[in-house]
Amino acid sequence: MDLKPLCIRIANRLGIDPLDIKFEDLTDDSRLYIKENYVAINKKYENDYEECAKCIAHEYRHVFQLFYVNIFNDERSIRWEKELQGVINSSNMDSNGSNYIAQEIELDAFAFTKYYLENYESIPVINKVPGYDEFLDKYLHINHKIM
Image (cartoon, rainbow, N blue to C red; front, top):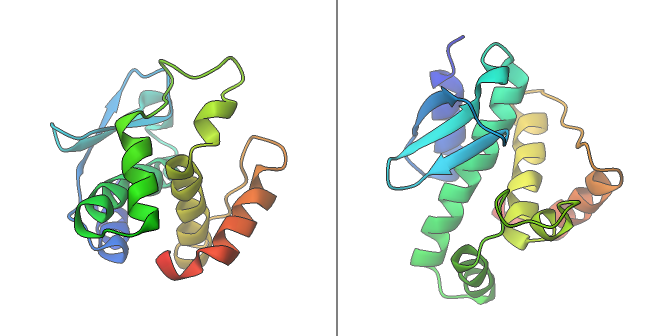
């Protein structure tokens, strides 16, 4: 499965450089390794193009967020920078993960994933958390210019 063309399309949409993709044994679906410059995707998705696309779009959006906070000085960049400094992930989230998905940086990454994949790749994105898609739709409506 060749993910490189998808990586290039998503990176171009975000104005970032594409990162390498590696498959690893993870407890998460995917993870961004900033210092090493790659995205790790859970090996269980190695032959699942749609799940890989979701992981890549999500993690690439986090790269975009990092650039955004370093380039802009607006309310969003201040909020994102604060969250990025104290990020909640699988190692420190609460038992139901609500503090993880409630972070604006995660909401933004999930919203971008839904927006990009549905509008540009014709891949439907339905989240596992009941009601979260409606929340993402509201976020997209308010923040459509940054998508």
